[in-house]
Amino acid sequence: MKIRLAAAALLGLSSPAFAQETDAPKPVTVSGSVALVSDYRFRGVSQTDKEMAVQGGLTVTHESGLYGAVWGSNLAGWGTFGGANMELDLVGGYKLPIGGGAALDVGVTWYMYPGGASKTDFAEPYVKLSGSLGPVSALAGVAYAPSQQALGNWSNTPESREGDKEDNLYLWGDISTAVPKTPITLKAHLGYSDGNPGLGPNGTSVAPTGSYADWLVGADLALGKVVLGVAYVDTSITKRESEYLLPNFSSTKDGSTIAGSQVVFSVSAAF
Image (cartoon, rainbow, N blue to C red; front, side, top):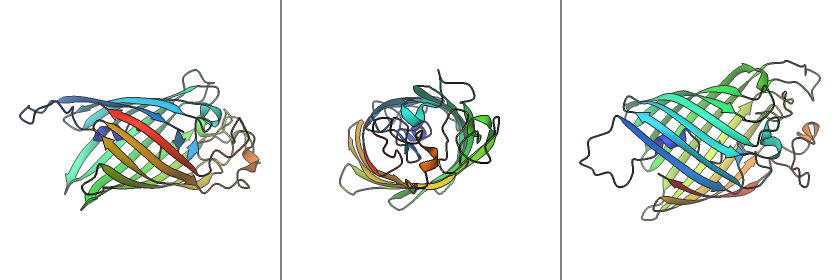
């Protein structure tokens, strides 16, 4: 899970508040968000050297369920993927109601790193199932990136070789619930990554140490269109497990871990 307003998450945004209930549904809707976060965590690992990030995205949705989205964030340290200082995600998919308030969402994310070295971009198809049980909303997802050079094992393990291609699997689940008679929403996340245990062509990896778990617990406070968020984020990656990835897999400021526990704050607004 990304500690950001992910492009896919934008699909759940409602239409602007000024729209009247009597207005006819529009065949195409546009929604978006901007956010300031104290640390951009991608699947539990900092992508901004444990510093702040400015993020934003737009989603265009057709009444048929087809959608397209774009989302971006600044980067630093481990997250730079060959020198890029920005991540730009392009997303396309189809969301289908399947009854009982549940929905099936199938699509693909193209991760881009403008300005970085070659062999940085990669594609990751996903399937998500969402629904609710009483006051609790839940989502389960599977994202599988087929073998690509950007995900390959090029260094830091005996099996490494230049030009290698590897795949990556990510499984996750999210739950949230509103606190009655308050503007507060509680949330939790659990994810599992399985991929390349070495470093890719640009000295980084989507699945540091090959496989690990990440989790989050937090809360959001809605103040009109502005949402204040706080979350405790952590991973199962220990310092001993990640020693062979150093110095890449550490803060450029003090050498500290970028996958340890962290409280992340956010301020976001939807439009």
